[in-house]
Amino acid sequence: MSVESILESIEKLTLLEAAELVKAMEEKFGVSAAAP
Image (tube, rainbow, N blue to C red; front, side, top):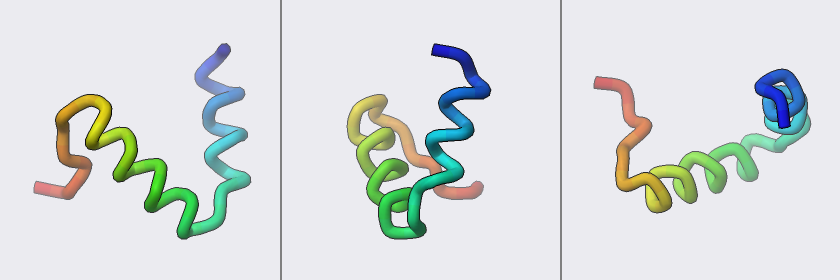
């Protein structure tokens, strides 16, 4: 899977889906995506 294909998938998300994706990534990787 290329970075380009990942970006294309993310582009198709709704705002709600994008928020859920960020939350899931934060939980999975134990990080916060909040701006400093």
